[in-house]
Image (cartoon, rainbow, N blue to C red; front, side, top):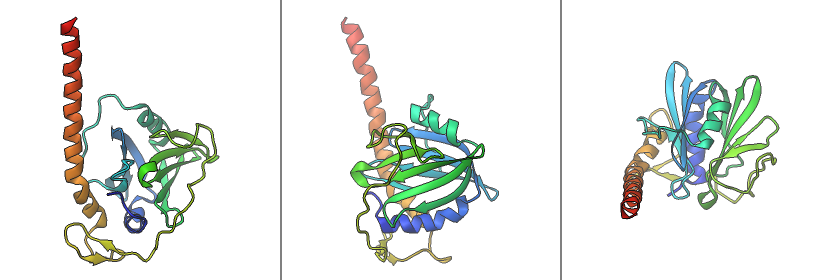
Length: 218
């Protein structure tokens, strides 16, 4: 299940301080519905994972590397050109909604990555210094060059509580004694991601076999 607005608020509050002032070293797109940013910040290398899967839309740090395709998809190529070497200025949630904005500076120009983690309409968009859309992970409501505006905000109670995965323990904003929410989110979705990765691998094998059978039949 995709993150709620309250979960997004909590995880952004947890990971933003670690990212602020960091530098984007590498950008990857492990599959069609997610990107990862490798960030060097405060003497550490962090990997930020952003999923635009309508069923599991989320963001958090990764503790392990995902396999990546040998040839980066077009959106990944665009992000590499625009974001690698960028300095992260701020990560923030927009209007207490399921929208996150990552503001950066690249070659002296502002550049922004927006993650709309809004379920069925989830998307990741790249904006230029004029707030115009320069690319998006999934086909969405904007054309290239159009000015970006967030979707109409829905009511999400900021005071809602977060149920920690597998424990049933109610938590509020993380404290120094609290376990990492980012790590909990990674664990929550790991099994599902691995199952979907296996399914994608099976489909790729089936597709290759179908092509070979078709050629053999001819």
